[in-house]
Each structure stands twice: as C-alpha cells, then as structure tokens.
Length: 325
Image (cartoon, rainbow, N blue to C red; front, side, top):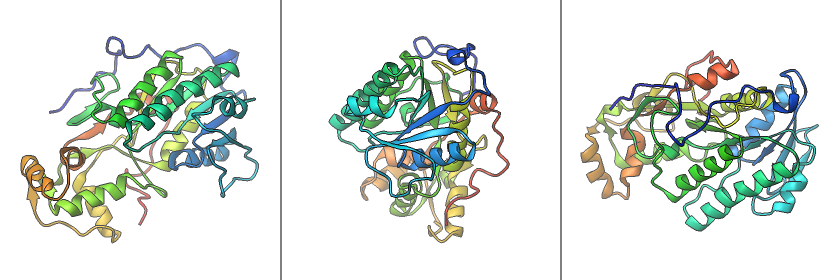
C-alpha cells in the first residue's frame, strides 16, 4: 500500500505547528551551547563531532566517561535516572540534543529510562532555563509497514514493542514541553551495532529475498544525521512542538542494500525469493518473527522534505555512500 504524503497539518492530538518566534530573543547568528545527552553512543558521538566541525560550542553528557574525548569539548557525567546529575550537567547550556535511550526489551527498563528518564531530563532543562530540547526518536514508533513515502502526519504511530512504545511516550513528553522530535530512518555508519548487523542476520537466516528484495527503506548515514541535528540545534526559530523525519530523500531497495553489502564481502548474495507469507512460515522454523521479516519484506520509507527544507540540507551523494566495509 502506498500512502500519499500530505505534509500540511498534524493529525488531531499529534503536534502543533512549528513556532516562528526566535528562542529567548536569539538570532540565528548568536552563539549557543548545545548539550548532547548520550554523547558516547552511536548517534550522540557523531553529533558531538558534527557540532565541533560546525564551530558550535557543546558539552558531551554521558552516563560513563568517554575514552575518546574531543579536545576542547567539556564533558559531564549524568544518568537519565539521576535528576541531580542532569541538573548539574546542563548548567550553562542553551539547547539539549537528547540522544540517550535504552534499546533493550525489558519493559521496566524501557519505562525507567526512556519515559521517566526523559521526564527527568526535561525537568532538569526547565530548572536551567533551557526551552529547546531535540529528542532523537525512531521510525520504529510507526510499527509494522508498509509505509511508502509518508510524511510526518500521514500515519498514526502504532508501536508494537515495549521499546518503541516507550520511545513514543517520550516523544509526547518532549512535544508537550515545547521540544522537537526527530525520527531518523535506518542509520548506518561506523559504530552501527543494530541496523546493518540485524539486516545481515535476518537475510542469512532466512536464506532468501522476500518478494525479490523490492521493498524500499529509508536510510541515513550517521554523519549526515549528526550534521542535520547540529544544524537544527543551532537554528532559530526553534521548531517548538514539531516532528521531523531524518533520512536520505531517496529510498533504497532491500536488494540494493544487500548487493552493497555483498560487494563489501559482508553478505553472501541470495539466489532464491519467497513471498512474504511464505517467508513468515519459513522464518518461524529458524527463529525469525514477523517483525524481523517486516524489515526486509515491507516498505519502510519516509518523506524528509520538511526537515531538509527547514535546515537547508542537501545530499550530494547516494544513500548508501560511505556504507562501512
């Protein structure tokens, strides 16, 4: 099923239009200090490097100290479950990029870190007079596909896991506080321990394409995502209460990604194909669930036009450029 992108207004109860007022009287050229929470993670560490590259002052906030500190970037140790540490870490900060999340399957941890932890972070930001919080969420909040070129307000999120549900609840908390939400596509690049490794495991376990690998997915290199987040954080107006998709504007097919991985020696090319229903039957015998097969057998591509326009971002390369060998 293909859904035509609307991109005109939010669904009832979803979000409010982006603010046009400058943040605390700030102009686009005025300096800001950005705190990256989750600064040692896959996305957070890339975002710190992007901020430094753009000449934007930042503080790297993480639960544990990093062994790869960047010269000139102050660090602060804080935990989402420790409100006092968060208040201390955000001293002197203008904008927060919230890139810290629990990504396991324990429901209690999902609530404690992703929901309660986000509330703690928002409270700490408010105590420090910080009104701008950017939350790095996930397209997983939409639930199973197919999603074919949809805009941010064309489908009601319907998460199917405790993890994705907790991320959606965290979104609601951030939006209610006037923050901004960014939903990246599938993120690849150095340090990726989920998307490409998971994609390879599913395909190799199944041993076949699903529907010839025709399904399309939205991807984004972690360096591109970090560059977009840095630009968004430094901008005025603040896009208060808005939601954005962050991905390359051109989707790739599952087969295209598979071929790229085969070319780099990371995947053995498959010679057979199954229908989605047959893949579910076959996959069950090998420990794969329908959720696993949804990744490689249904469309998951999203329209990032609003974010690319808001940030003036242009991609001068193909979506799989820089895919690690």
